[in-house]
Image 1: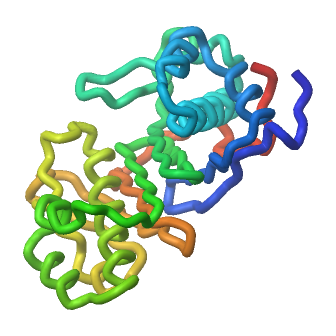
Image 2 (image 1 turned 180 degrees about the horizontal axis):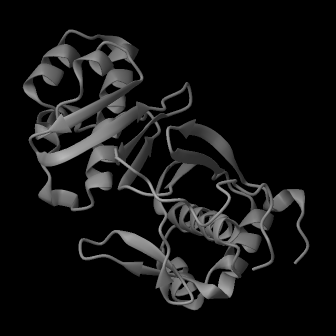
Image 3 (image 1 turned 90 degrees about the horizontal axis):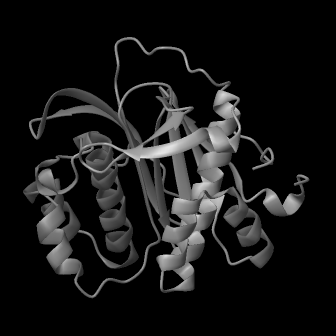
Length: 253
């Protein structure tokens, strides 16, 4: 398959410490979706077919194909050599010829936007949310936010309140995804650093909810969406086997 502009539906978004974050364009595009489908293996195509609605099916296909293409580039392997397995708590990891690769990666998507984060070592989580109205926002506030965060939200009005909620939500989701144990972690116990509540976009933290781990937390929000990435701070990170560069067009699947 020849590379062409239609295949280029992802681009570098931001470099945050040792982590690279890629933006994936998830707008409907039949040609792109056909190219993406060619990248998927049979279990992934079976999963793709099980989606009842076009939106979730499109987001899965485009994000998974972009993830495959970038991992092939980083590890200089063919798409057929690459596979995904699932860790104990459901978090996926990649293998090349049956051997786990050292990279940490995480994927999130919402509406027409996706983010994929990579790092050479350390646990990693990314979350993205389009800012849309939620009928159960008050219930979400009570479930997701701690007392200090709820008090700050209560003092905020209008559009700024919505933006603040999604900022806090994505930061907590990024930390939960990096932790890797899903619902075992109560988001209300994850206290966002005071500096980030005040508007700073980057901080490090240690939480009693995740003892013994220090995290770097970055707010990646822009005018189009709220987003965040959390990365475990490692004293020494091993070298990545890949070159760390995201391809603008993929190699042949």
